[in-house]
Image (cartoon, rainbow, N blue to C red; front, top):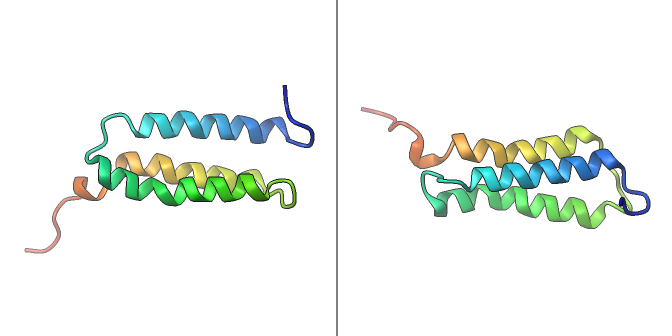
Length: 85
């Protein structure tokens, strides 16, 4: 049951984000680095939820926040090849 004034697409994006978040936490290269990389997405999600009643952004904004969590699974700092000679 959707809350009053909440679009079902927004609830779907939130649910998809939680699934991606759980998936990104599955065997990361380093849990501490993973945590540091997803903290901005967690904070951003909480801010977007807090201001949702006053400011509703486009789906693109919500998808980009979700992609940040997704990217942390593949682009962790310890997984990067060493640079330089």
